[in-house]
Image (spheres, rainbow, N blue to C red):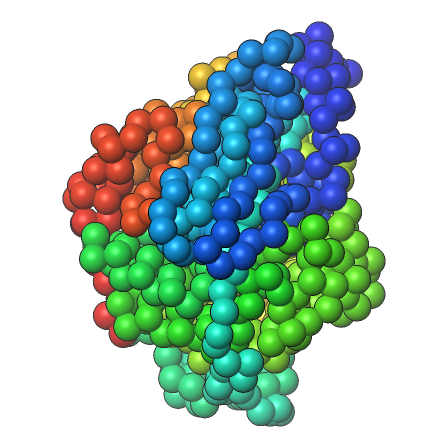
Length: 548
């Protein structure tokens, strides 16, 4: 039975969630304005040296809806709202992907402008996070926590824009491949898998072996590089749409960053090739960086057609490798279809000493994502994806982003061990699956702190800040969790420093959304935030590079 508060919030959510159904993420289900990996918002066609960017943005968490914006949590309808213009103009360059508005206020901004960097599209801003609390009658969770309810909603960002790139080779990247093996023998230092054979220091998956040496490993709640040394990742997320973005990698590494999430842009408008992505990965490896790899598509104006060098096809008309429907409303199998392509297998194998695969990006179930049913749907989808990657021969560590577009830490606490148990690749009994959690809990209405706090603490009225959740719940898991932090009003907001400091105290890895124009985006706190994220000892400056 819904409380009066939850009923009100649920009604607000009902008015918005259907409009987001066409932009669901890798694990499937409906999503709001999206953020990373599988963004499919409408965008202007990107072209070299041209102007681009979409108009407007949706209402942010906790904000009032403005003209063209959606109603935020706790907000009331209005015609006001903040507007802002994303991106900056510069000579030449390419119209970028990602960029400006996301979070707090709804805007009627003019999008981005031409520049040599990534600007030029409406960014993560503006997802409606509405929804209400639904009591579940005390659902028992792992570790003795009791579920006291949840909140419905959607969140994230609408990814738009895109930058075009020209040139490059259509040839695929070379990789180490693998040959089918039999038996179940594992030699010292190898990652074992059912039916696989490994060489010393190598990895195996179901029925196969690889002679490559070294891989990132997940041991306990730590990430280890291929030399066996612990890695505490600190870096930025970047939508990769041109080989010239080696500049982004070099700039971030010069600040001390030892990690990055690369969102590989698939769209034909960008003209990327396997060799182009190889160039980007090679540069990051040369900088001794740990890299998370996601897939990204934005060009709905051209039916999300994939570049021919990447295998081509209309993204939402691909043949599902799992037999599930592939469509804009059920995109999970569409992404798996791309991951089944050999060029990605080759790249991931070639760079497995430095790469973790995003096997499940930000997720919202087709129903109420805050309910126990929603969390169970996320867990089921996560298991399906892990099994897919392993049967396809991928031996890299995998990351599953949390339910509720990454915000649901409780779902990880509740289902994390059961999800990891299906992973057939392990190191000394440690399944090679970890999780991602977007600690975007700094909204002024304290929505996530209250909603997630009640679940994590097992008590009505419980409140947990993002920093407290890092220390009490994320850092105490028996598996690694990568934390997402930003400075958008509708997400981490002003809590970014407290979260970064707590992550440093607890030795937790984090990635910042996002990289733009030579530094990190800090739309609320500006240069003060940028200086802290990149220049403090708890930020990029204090990170240690991989030793492999």
